[in-house]
Image 1 (cartoon, rainbow over the protein chains, first blue to last red):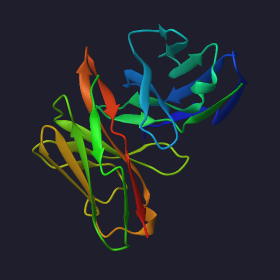
Image 2 (cartoon, one colour):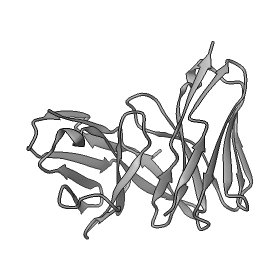
Image 3 (cartoon, chains in turn green, yellow):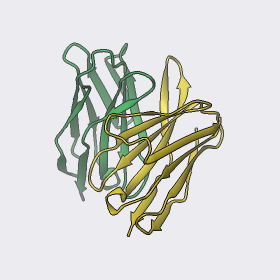
Length: 111
Length: 117
């Protein structure tokens, strides 16, 4: 079946450094790839998304890249801050409006 | 932005009882809503798709008779966990899509923490 693999599962960086999280998807029909940030006990918040007709998208310190041929997409956070610490999930659309999520990455930004 | 609410935010119940969770789209209509379950330190697992005016569709491995879904209006979907057991304790989150350009953006409710004693 469809699945999304996300790496790494945990990531620790120093404040100001960059963080990169990578995902691979299996469904070649997927055309929408959102990234969510989830703080403990709270709802996932959409932070950025990309559609299959675009290779890269940037929003201030956050960027996402997509390689449809390789079925890879990545989240890049630059100039990390302690408030960026959270769990990040990638997701891929699988038809019918449904999303399948990666396993999550716990990002810790050390002051 | 689109707002999705859930009620209750947390619930504790005894084993064998049923619990109903509500999901509402506050400022938009949603003919479709999605229900997820999230165990501690794990990802969101899609349970079912709630369809307004018709039966819900369940993902493989999800018992439809245990997790009853009703989508009676364009702004409300309910999930009832029947005969709850401790293993049903989890964080249940709903989402509703908002159509933007050519695809749907999913907005999540705040979640409901269910603890079954």
